[in-house]
Length: 482
Ligand code: ADP
Ligand code: ADP
Ligand code: MG
Image (cartoon, rainbow, N blue to C red; front, side, top):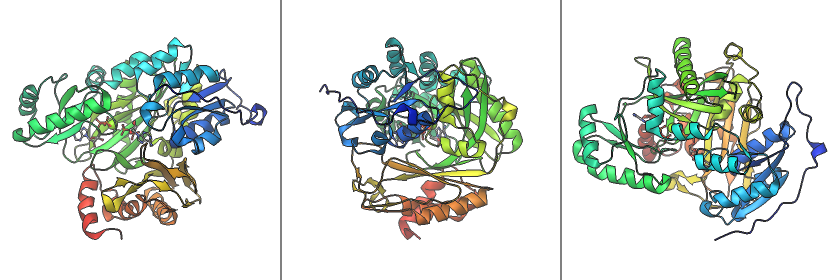
């Protein structure tokens, strides 16, 4: 169905926006945010801080969402389902034309890593806030990305050198690599299209489910076979690059606390276990990969890390702002979204690598509208009470408020709780207090689950890896919330 675009009312007079900081010249007047939820709010705030007008797009189901009220203009782009609105390319492009926005920030998810979207914006003369079409194409394909990492001299997870076309060839590769292996969608993201295979007998069934999930989620069933690293940590490096060839990194984030579907739940910066030597080696490797592909904008190079051998392996590069970016902002003082916009304006990075200092410790917990008592089923309805914590070192990125409806159309993440402390122990304590104070009524959330998880002795001591949550879930099912 073709939607009628509803043009917006103009809300905030431009003279109300704060003056731009001295030292750079903003050449953009208006940015459209092709996203929803907390990340849309986050980008709108960055625009306002830079004195740039913001244009929100929204579905009818999102008409009361905070991002619609925060933006200077808001344009309705369709009905509730993603396919009819946020993933409707023609409607998003039309909103861009109607609003007169010179640039588009894609947030994460949706069109953020779709080269076709960046290309379409180029065609209508709008700037895509992110890397070039070529870079998105090469890094969006896990097989090409791995090859780029190998070419840049970066260690990668052992696996098939290219796409494995059939189930039979997957078995040959798995036998060559050695079980357990992972079947992984070449176009994958957000943990979808991944299956662990422990024995040759299992491969046929899991190949079919992984491939079907990949086809449904990404429109491509192409698969890789990779050695399954047992109980690794997930450690990733934040990159910032300008359009003049300057690339720096902003240290690491540890994201080993992942649910059973490889989706991140709790992230922190810095990692509890990285030595200065490994941090430098991993940071240098990430910068080399970014430089080798001509990267610009913010991006993340993800690694698996073995803290016993101190070895790390390239996993993938995400060519966008990441959900967990605030923990890096908290310990570096760098506003990553502002930097994305400034780089897209042609600005040079204002820092060299040696200017970046890490200070303190930050943790993010993803708050979702899911019911832990019912296997984390999505929970919809009206939020009747919304009392987030608010004290020193606490940031809550969200788009919901009391009285708002949570609808079934979108990702269940409704807020991110970010705490900062002087060191890890201080940050963990603040996280526990903040989760204790976080009071939401009307819908079910994962907050009780997060409270129990973040009080677990292994979480508190930092003795975790990607197998932590699967093990914790068994205790949780028996004991429930503490
Ligand atoms: P990774 O791909 O490394 O797990 P993130 O954790 O940053 O990276 O995000 C995972 C993906 O999940 C995003 O690219 C996006 O597709 C999806 N996603 C997660 N949370 C949301 C959300 N609140 N709204 C829309 N998409 C989301
Ligand atoms: P996505 O694009 O879905 O984020 P990734 O390649 O980043 O896919 O992998 C997601 C998660 O799956 C990782 O953070 C890690 O927990 C797990 N994983 C991926 N590859 C491997 C591997 N080879 N061995 C063990 N775990 C892996
Ligand atoms: Mg990933």
